[in-house]
Length: 552
View (cartoon, rainbow, N blue to C red):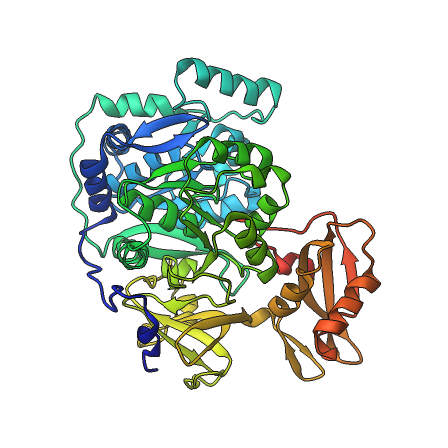
């Protein structure tokens, strides 16, 4: 496919950047510490930590892994924590010690946790005490030998830390009882590491950095092998795009999406560390009032989010009282941003949501809209620097501009493969290094790509293709609707029929109202046959609505 998208690049954005400029992720972190050491790099619950302080703690943790746990290069270390100050310390510490980070969703059930620990072969886990009870239930059946337990208050200073821990444990009862023999407190691990001598571990871009688990296109979670080179490449590619909008050492980024998710991991932790930004870690983004209160305290310049997060903020009356004069960028990803949400966001904040697209398997960045974008287009943007894409039919033929097919991606950010699953790897990576995304897309004459839907989510009604995203986008524009999801259900008459799940904003809304609105705005075969109202919709860890669970 000709790289027609290059003609639509913003002035100054290069088609190729040096993706081998740094030998490892650790080298990028080291440079940030050198340049921005005295500046606050991370804050959580009102407590700040400079880049130099973080660096010292990272070395202490790396030393603990190396000297006390005798961690070998390439060993897998699981991290089961939300956005707290210990997260960057643990992740950069593991990488500095030559280990491989296995990010774990803290909300996993025992079954999901057991699968991931066994599959990854993790020998060590760093877990927040709030989730240690889940770990205790599966620990004997996993290869984990070492457990480091953190508390939310660990890094908040003696008095504040004690108070926060007391409230979480005794008042809010958010720490279920657990007993794990030989578990080491996080602060003790740092203290033990501090008195030992850390020996730097040589790292190269080909070394494995993360096993990032994803459901991919099949049910069982698989570990995408992301190397230091994959992440460094994506940092370099992204920097090329945002350099015109953001300045080194001057940005304040709100990190509400969980850092254990690939979007937040690379964008918020890695890219904004490279920029020397001040990173405000939001531990519980579901507490929207507290989240907004945090944002009011800071001169925020960047917010990353998903559609459901933007929507939740917009639907809280306090959001309108934020001073948006310092804001430079709202970056949307993880799921399709809906037009109704994007339009209201622009109206309230004065900023467009710049939509981006990526996958766990691509570290994650693939496409981004230019930073000069002024209004919502529904596009996921242009393929970023050093990236090639093809839109293919089911037979593997490359389709011309304007035709819908599966999006395939090739570039230095594409994973090495799935951990110990050559059969699954072969299904998605071809001999030319192109990755099948599982997403249906269409490219226009200027190279902009529009995501149509997930291939497996497409609904066929009487032989016509219906894309849930389109139906959801239309229904989301109803003022009485808060959230909506669309799935296909079996139908004797049409093969499949469309069913909607709706969360009401207006209690008076009826199924007839929704269907009548759809009839006005959609072709007959796209109109839902059934509408079910729910108090809430099932969501993933980043707030992506899970159609899969609705289908079940």
